[in-house]
Length: 402
Ligand code: PMP
Ligand code: GLU
Image: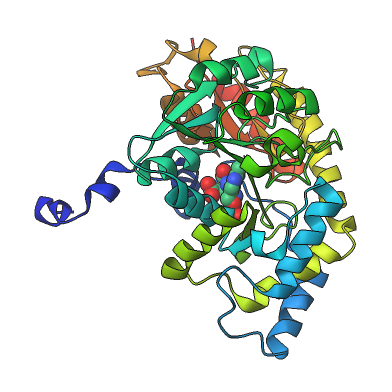
């Protein structure tokens, strides 16, 4: 791009970073297009297809004329289904006017940040964190304040750590459980510690991203918003992408205090007007139908978790936790920093992932994108054959680093 044209771009876009997950997935596609046999473990996307009954519901909705604009916060049919789901699965009590449906949970989070944050506000992000949290908070003009739970603590942040990070400027606490990128699941007690801290600060909103709720191997999903002391300070984010294998449908939602829900709908009314009508009807059907296909996918992810864990543990120099949810590993590979293969020396997580892509033809994402330079992220939403082959390639390639 010529410099004159670049100068015409906004400061907003010049200063924001490109999504590392999406960038890496594209690099893998490009390398594959050149004829290389690339295994992409970069994008967090279930490799399963959307269950047939959900697709059928979308086709039926189209036939029934769900082809028009919907109310900005979503069709009543879907918002009612979400209210029922929140009560059934999460012990959360919402009214329909507290639900806002968006084009993916990503938009839900963007709406929230734009609705709540001003310049000078701080957002405590429990780290490692999903890559887009950081960028969205910055786009909203606020300052991200990552607080890290290291691998020794299963990557979880304690109430005390959170307490130390809070200042008079803190406006939001943002995290995911089950967590992208670590797969860690916060227990009831750990969430209570966090809630106890936040409840001391009435101006802080907790944004609890629960999009991996149905991929939880402990079978105990706890929503922090169900605790009495923070229920009026919590926004629960969820979506269809992961649990129902509906990434391409672009459907997510929040349950929030009314004033926040109204503000998010106001913003959405100027940006997208809301999600597709027939997709929303399929979403309502997904939430109110038998969850057996979702449970089957979870069982498959658990089997893959065990497979990948055993293969990663065989690689010298690679340290792992044992993820209890989602479909990621976030291994610590810092023992390779400073090591070389011929001319190439690995100094950080980006160089590590570039080395793997070029030499093992395995695409993964650098830990720096998720707030931990010592690690890299593998998505194991791939077949057992692909995972076995990818781990073999990684092991053989890393053995060349001296
Ligand atoms: N939150 C987390 C933790 C995620 O991993 C993702 C990625 N899908 C999202 C939100 C965004 O989900 P969606 O595809 O519904 O926008
Ligand atoms: N959330 C997934 C990931 O972390 C999908 C890509 C994205 O939206 O970032 O890889």
